Image (tube, rainbow, N blue to C red):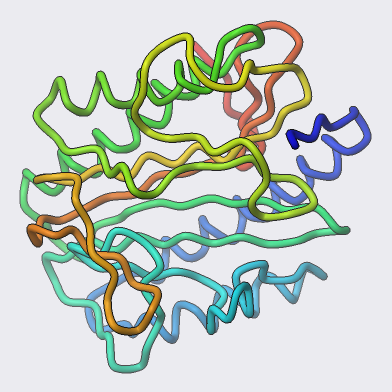
Length: 255
């Protein structure tokens, strides 16, 4: 069942989203060669708890950390570890969520570790563009399929792969709510978008194909062909008129 948030509930989600934005900004600052993903995870948890919030990933279905830290060909759900030290030329995707006053926020970004190749820079930027292209389609009266179609059209039109086995989702009191929000699909299909719906839109885009495999740890998802993958996510709210509000990107104004 899709939940519709009233203005008071949206305000609580807005506050959670703004806090997560602050956390994510600080996490980007500590990504550097030689840093362990476990250290970044510990910093994320400290930042979240310092602000009287709860890491929503920690313990979720048994996940052992506050962030997902996915390197290079890892798509999502990479488990932070002291044994994973960031290396120059890699890319790192960090996915993080928190709960503030009972309401969830969810966001992800991919950043370079030191100097990276031009192809990886294009991948990161294209993935970011795919989010905004998809979010532009998230308007009252459209359907979920319009979001995925917008992402797919941009990514595949540029020669990139769109991960299909993993999707965005509704969000609110729970991290994962209806509906699923795929990054591919046909326009005019899926659930109709209504004011007060809140969604986590999260393109996962690869330099190669879209097929993935799960690793033996039961969490980490990698591209099947070993191609690097980027991830970009924000929590958005469907508005009565106009383009959506990006709850995890305070101050953003659509052009």
